Image: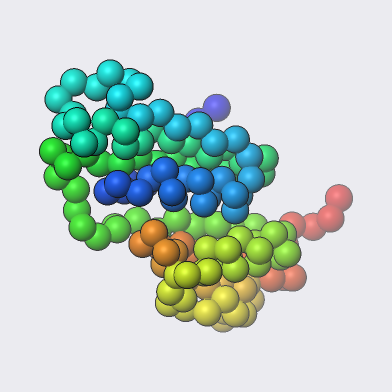
Length: 143
């Protein structure tokens, strides 16, 4: 099996972000620090930052993140948007509300020209998200 997993890079607040996403999405959260991994060349003040963290949700969403130590360059802007989509209207609206809390809605979650509910936002960690909820015409046929 091949999987595609978003991996978000933070500058010092990966622990806070991962804990937030774990509460929002549910599931198992694992984190390890640079100190725990014994990473050479990492400054003392960065050793307790997150080297790797992962949220494994019951719905199958795998979200990974880490901190970038001060000794490493990192773009100041986010160049990726994480997309959530499906036909579970209530669940996707719950996730939308959680991500929007404290964030900035850039396109409200409303019915789009293609018939789905669609919205875009930036959460309070600066991560961009799109949510697409399949409209009645775009939902899989019941079996």
